[in-house]
Image 1 (spheres, rainbow, N blue to C red):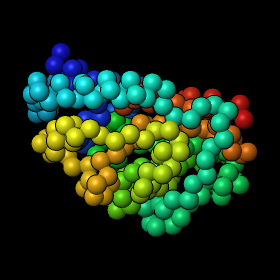
Image 2: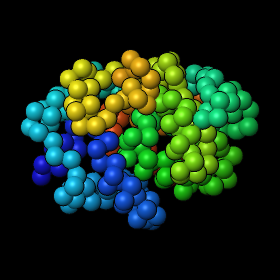
Image 3: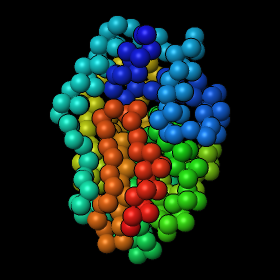
Image 4: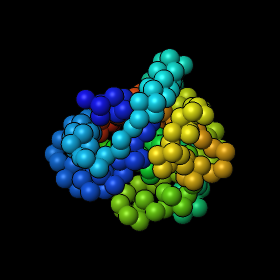
Length: 249
């Protein structure tokens, strides 16, 4: 189906945002895995006549960008056994949060996501929220890191009441340290803008850059004990996998 052609293209989901807002409640409350929720969302969009109508040229640009990213980043993200780089980043309220201070309390779950514009990221954040109490049961602190500006994160928090800090990596330095950083190609930027999404309006002028979505479970000593990152933005670490990693610490 045409839907799956452009769903397999790189990083473009913003034009589905209206559909996401309308359908997210039924998806987010479903007692299903995150992968199942994402698939359900995609199916809904495939059946939605109001969903984006990409041209063949748009699809070609996105497909090429996706292939190039997969080729240049065949194994993104730090690996199990690596030391998790420390960070000191502002949360949505301007408070500086450091990894070292979080590790003083116990294990840390570090989630990297693209931005409030991405419905796949929002599905993931809602799935993490649903499991937040279980993470806490194992003494773990959850934190999300995004390249977007703090006001965008604050709007998310006010709307969705996420029970964890969202930190803004305003120069992508931490995203780079965790080996998730990439810059969008110019032709893809043009497609985004044509279809209504300006990444710079979220990240700041000149910052057409994103992280590969990734999640890391870090033990109290700062060592990564579980890791997941994939250039296919539809693939995310399952909350169940996070819980399994916490049980082993």
